[in-house]
Image (cartoon, rainbow over all chains, first blue to last red; front, side, top):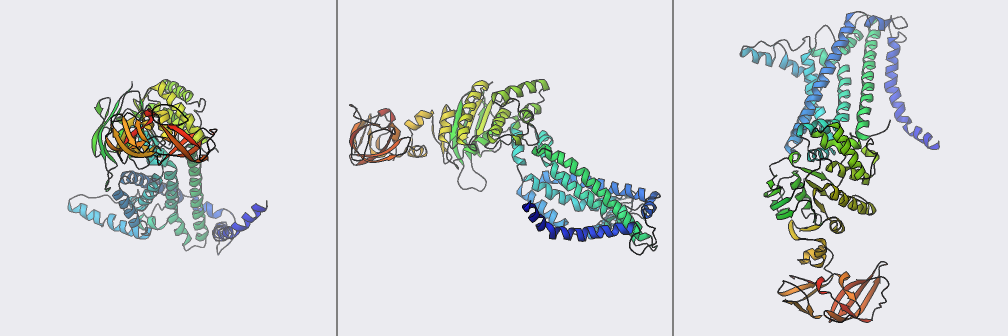
Length: 285
Length: 345
């Protein structure tokens, strides 16, 4: 009992900071979205939520956001895992991997988006190069499938996956793979029955991080996306900075809905990963 | 079913290393036998095993299994099972799935897998553990499952790399007995590596002593202790406590203890070796009995460590704990000819 009280006292400063900074902002935003706070003409209640979810802009934006996050996460994970498996064998490979990651990770997404824009836009490097050999590329920037947005996310996040998976491969995975080989497993069987199951918890963790980040990030789709439909973060910002007094409440409402979706995704992940980790460690739930 | 292993002139040097790990190592493991490779850490014994397993490549020489060179075959094509120092059970699989792994990879049908798994879990005395996770087992149980997993596909060759050295001594004894029993049932040609001489002599029918990457001696366990071929082997086996310089001639060895009768191929100057346990205290008549004076007695509880001098030479010997010997006593010591060996100084 005494012990527990001491523990509570010890985490109090950290807890207070989190509650104040995170909970405070979130709570104030929530109050604004309900018309309870801020300079707004929104009536008290769920009016702002009703207004933003009414009509196709929200639904189209939600679908686009989910499309971008899902495809970007899937591609980044596939590329990162494949690269990690290919590069881990040699010291030179590991150095290359670290170098690649160091190259990409510190570059802000905004800069990445500009670079991708310069490369993929209708007047960009790629289109001009293609034109000289007589090929006309389809629109890649501000296109219906958000190719440029996804490309930017994959370019940025695949090295992140690579680093995480390389770290996970540093554990006893290699020893288990050797055991599997001595038991007669062909390389493909080793990958399918040993390597990937052992990496599953790390891969799931990094996937949910990327999914939640791409779902909430604003700058890349704002720069490289279309005017309509707008993914949710862009929609939120656009409503938040709109001229009408009601826009602020609506913007916050959209932002909070993004948070709800991200939390739902994280919870689904936690369930899935606990099952995966349970399978790996044998921990009882 | 069983398969012989021939290791021929194997050389191995790690990239960038100046001294080789293995130098012209040759070894015959006849089908169905158990051979131990015994050596201190750094002697190259684990490297030797990993070359046979296909996990490392030698820089020279050949490994033949059942008469065919296997060096070009990756591990999964070699007909073998390997047990490592750590059990390395697959953490994402149950105990039964671990044992079944090799059979599953070969596409064996489910009913046959189930039968074989049950049979092996019985054999390693863990029936009913099939549905558990490896993390729920103790270290000894995990190693037993690792043994069952390696044997599941009935490999021609079973390789073990210090399989019991991570277990506590009590358990180690049980595991050796289990391994011997399993070998009797399954018959896989067994090559195992250890630094523990008791383990080697308990389990193996032939022991190869590997020192500094070279085969120093290859003999049945008893011969190894009775007749070490070099001083280094005797030292490694703890039998160089009594090394008496002298001169060997056919059937004899002349040294400060007098002329001793023995059987040796050595000629000229050499060192006479006799283990402390082999010296018999008492007043026997006949060959190789020398008078001696006890100079020190240390009670070790299970036995007495005794020092005695004879002809100016200090001899170390051991007796049972109840022997009535005190420093200053005069006695006679019998040096049994079959326990004497002569090595190059």
